[in-house]
Length: 118
Image (tube, one colour):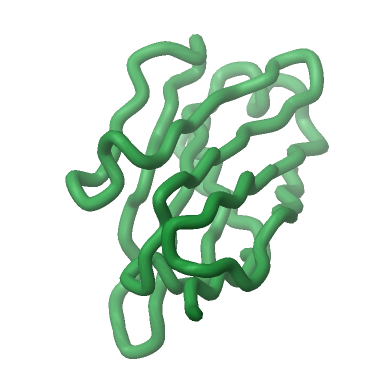
């Protein structure tokens, strides 16, 4: 089993920045082999992938809407994944979820709320 806990959300003005963190605990095998990512879900919308990074910490993939503004990174020593979000705009308002996919299993955190508003 794996547990994911997100933090770092909050209220930020347009143009501002936030850094989301996700700390994983549980089975070391899953943590080491899994691809990790960030998803978000805005009210009335489907959950969408924002950024995903593979088990080697290389070759991140981003949604077109966040390319050039968001950066995903992974710290294997801390079993953590981060999402640096810059140049935020109101369309980025959503609940952001951490995700781990490993050995045909998918795990989700509880999410952290991001609100971009003046």
